[in-house]
Each structure stands twice: as structure tokens, then as C-alpha cells.
Amino acid sequence: MNKLTRRKLIAGSLATAVGASGLAVAAKLAQRYGLIPPDSGGFYGPGETLTYAAQRLLTRHSLAREFPRSEISKEPFANEVDPLGEEFQRLQQGAFGDWRLSVDGMVTRPASFSLADLKSFPRHSHITMIQCEEGWSYIAEWTGVPLSHVLERVGALPQVRYVVYRSFQHDWWDSLDMGDAVHPQTLLAFEMNGDELPVKFGGPLRMRVSRQLGYKNVKYITRLTLSDSIKSFGKGLGSSAPEAGYAWYAGL
Amino acid sequence: MAETPRPRHSFLVRVTHWFITLAFLALLVSGLEIVVSHPRFYWGETGNANTPTLFKIPIPSSRETVPTGYGHVLPDENGWSRYLHFQSAWVLVLAGLVYGVAGLFSGHFRRNLLPTLSDVSPKQLVSSIAQHLRFARPTAEEACSYNVLQRLTYLLVVFVLFPMIIWTGLAMSPSFVSAIPAAVNVLGGQQSARTLHFFLTLALVLFLLVHLLMIVLAGFRNRVRAMITGRVAESVERG
Image 1 (cartoon, rainbow over the protein chains, first blue to last red):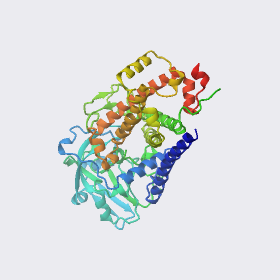
Image 2 (image 1 turned 90 degrees about the vertical axis):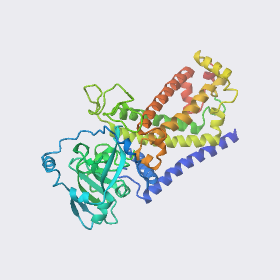
Image 3 (image 1 turned 45 degrees about the vertical axis):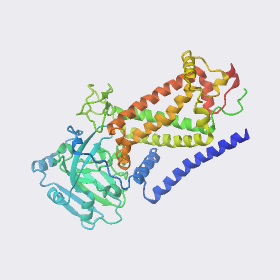
Image 4 (image 1 turned 120 degrees about the vertical axis):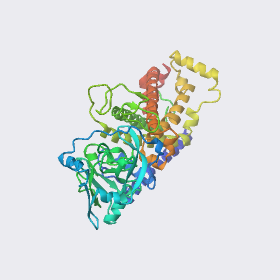
């Protein structure tokens, strides 16, 4: 009887210690390395923080899976977007010759780039899958200028922690942490499957974040703002997604 | 009320059982809610509303872009469903780890779940199945340990179904599989992982229903009390 109790006690405390110390270690690492997502408050904060921290530790240097050309989806799909307004139509009629991407915030050289500028920069292509949080997916070849190149060009300050991106869809904005911002597969994409990026799929310029879900891949990008804090953007939750009830981090 | 000398279920088994129960129900509700936004299933790497399906669930969707054949669109509840799904998944994984480590150290698996060689003989198996088919209530002695069918079922749930449903869930994460591509490649693709995740859910729901039926047949109040307090009332057991 005594023996059984002691054995259970040891096993119990061992198991509890493993669980508790796992949590404690995770919390400590999260604090030290800034592994806390902007939407870490509220009821779902603990789960969201665990997910973000665990995936950031696991995927620090990982690349999204790339596929052979034969795997490119013959029938890609895109959700409908609300009408983009007269200004967008005017730009579209001019073949987006007047489209500008402005870059501001914590940079030494604020800049405004035309599509021609962006296309003259070093470009990168990858054949990767884009997944919607709803459950559907397709594979396409994406070509664009690596976001890291644009950040270098404008002289991003070392204290920058977030790249905020805005779009022609005014209620749809988002932000990347530096891990994804300087990731080699993160592109300001202007081509899909070797052709101009169709408007339906986000043309003329889409943020392509290869390791996150579709809603992080915002269409019609017009402005980047670099910042050391996300607090002053919207409600301070990192993007419009948490304001609509969705997680800021979309790695799963 | 006389009590059995040692608890029917150890403290850690009881605590992790209820954490996992709660997490599983939250995962089930939120998971079904997420499926409603795209009740179509595929095999391989990709699939969307433009491609043929492996099968469809004949229900309306929460997205108007999904061709369901129904005229109406359900409200979009994916935001909180996804938050709840992943938070509950953490509860499930952490409680499962505590249960797994404790089970190894305490001998719970070896003593309570691993059947003996003679138990898995065809004769024993047939006799146990026959006993179940007759809905024979367990004797007091039998109710204090698991029979061979229970042992095999619990082993399947603990060591196959739960690990597989966690694995297939992770295999759907673009970020996770960027670090461990084999996790999705060996399953045949991301949409295959999603489809398997769905079938594993069905298997676990089937387990839950049979589990509940058995509890009702064996005496609901006494079985549930055993899993909460660890105590089994002898008068009821022998009655």
C-alpha cells in the first residue's frame, strides 16, 4: 500500500515536472527571443503564444516545400474580392504603369517604387503551395522581388521588428515578423506561372509568404511600413485578422 | 459505503482523462465548424472548388464560393474555431504527454493495458467478443480490470489514433512541414493529410460512442465516479 503510493507519487511528480518545466522553458525562451505574438492576450492567448513560439523555434531556417513544375495546379482557385474601386480601375486601364509601392517607417531612405522598378531588381521564383484556412489549396510558380532585397535597398534600421503591409483592400492589412520578412521565399510577387500576376490572384503585386496560409498573402500591396513596435497599428494586434477574430500568425 | 482498498484509476489517469475529454470535445466542435467552410475532400497534394473531389459531405457551407448545391450560406465562424482548435490541441498534447510519461513510469500501460499472451489467443478473443455481444454485465472482479477487448481498444486509441490525428493535423501546417517535410510527404500530400485527419476523427467519435455505451451498460454513475474520485462503491459493484 505504502509502496504503491510512493511509486505513484514519484511518477506523478515526474510527469507534472516534465509538463510544468516544459511550459516554463517555453515561456522563458519566448520572452528572451521575442516569441510572443501581437495577439497574445485574451482567452486564446496561451495557445496562440505556444503555437507561435514553438513554430518559430522549429522553423527558424526552414524553407517551404517546393514542387516540380509538373505539380503546378492546372485549376488554381481564388476567392472573390470586393470591388476595388475607381482608382484601381484607372490604374488597371493604364496597365498598372502608375502603380506605386511606397516604403516608409524606420528606414534610412524612404522610397516609392513603380512595378518597373521592382521588376528591374533581382528576382526569385519558387513553385510552392498556397493553402486557404478554409481547407483548399493549389500549387503555382511565384516570381517576384524578395522582400529582403527591398528592405536592404531602403536601409531598414536594425531595431525594426515588424514589416506592416497595406493594400488596395483598405480593411485588409497585415504584418510580418523579421523571420518571415527576410525569409528567402518571401516575395513581393508580380508573376504567377510565368505570366503577369492576374488581378484575381492579387495582381499587380501580392505579398507571397510561403510558410503561412493564404490570408497572410495579401493582394494589391501598395505600402510597406517598418516599425519596432506593432502597438500603434490598428488595435495593436498585428493585423486586421485578429480584429476580425482570426489569428495574426497563420503558420497552421 | 465500503470502498475498494486502492483507487480504480490512479490520480494522474483521472486528471488527464478529463483534460483530454474536454480538449477532445472542443477539438471536435471547432473541427467540424472548420470543415463546414469547405466540406469537400481530396487525395494528394492539392484540391479546391475547381478540382474533382474524393468525396463531399452533403451539407451547406459557410463560404459562398463552395459549390454545395444549397442555396444558403452558413455564418463564418472560422476565427474562434481555429483559435479554439489549436489551443485545445495544446491541452490534448500536453495532457497526453503527462499521461504517456506517467503511464510508462507507473506501469499503467504494462499492467492495465497490455494484454497477456494467453488473452490474445483466438479462444479468449472469441469468448470475450461473445460476452460483449450478449451484453453481459461484468462481475465485480472483472470490473476491477480491463478485459482483452478493452485493452486492445485502449491501446489502439492511445498509441495509434491519437498520435495519428496529431500527426495528420501537424502535416496540414505549411510552417511545420517546412521544417519536417517528411511529415506530410509520407502521407501522400497535404490534402491526403486533411482527409486522413477527418477519418481519424470519425474513428475517435466511434470510439467515444462505444465507450459511452459501455459505461451506461456497466453502470453509469459508478463508472463515472470511479473516473472522478477513483472510488468504486462495493455494494453497487457486487449488487
